[in-house]
Image 1 (cartoon, rainbow, N blue to C red):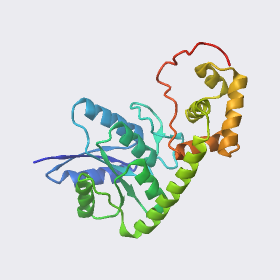
Image 2 (image 1 turned 120 degrees about the vertical axis):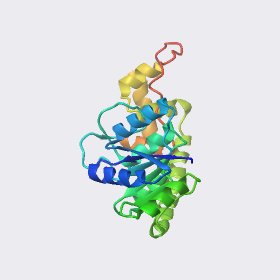
Image 3 (image 1 turned 90 degrees about the vertical axis):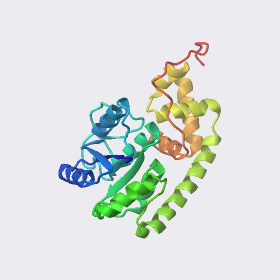
Length: 254
């Protein structure tokens, strides 16, 4: 019998433990539970190190909502403290372990958030109060590369995805207007680097970096770094890799 390894991620302990117990009663399901995003990441890393990767994650849509220190899970680094929200956890997990299928468990239907979950890489959006048989059908379905949504959400989700594609195409067009150096500066901005850090990383003078940043904002049609970063993310622009050492390119200040 092929066993399905499931990880329930929910910061409501009673719900997580009850759901895990119900799933564990199935003869072909092995289940674990985690009470936070960081705990889930540690659990996944530990399982991967032991050669027992999870097949499906069941993630609370409201994971971490209302908790202080809410932050993104991407890129995924295990063993960190803090709070990771549900949608960001989906994105981080799918990026780190593409073979894992993620189903989001929600207390209410929300087309916008369901669309965000699908864009982040989720394979399903299921009501928390659905029957166990329905949840098991979804779990087995996503392992066959099916996507599961409540019928009542389909129209709203399609509308949200269509609007998102339109915004993305407009954002991509604006990003394409940037010069290669300006795109490099934008990636540094997405990574959260300030003017001085960008100057040190790219071996430019702070004055030159300031000019590049002003040009980026002007070409993107925005008035703040936060707005530029949001537009960049819509266009699929990722952050510069801060884990790698900067390779010096001549060492001259521009």
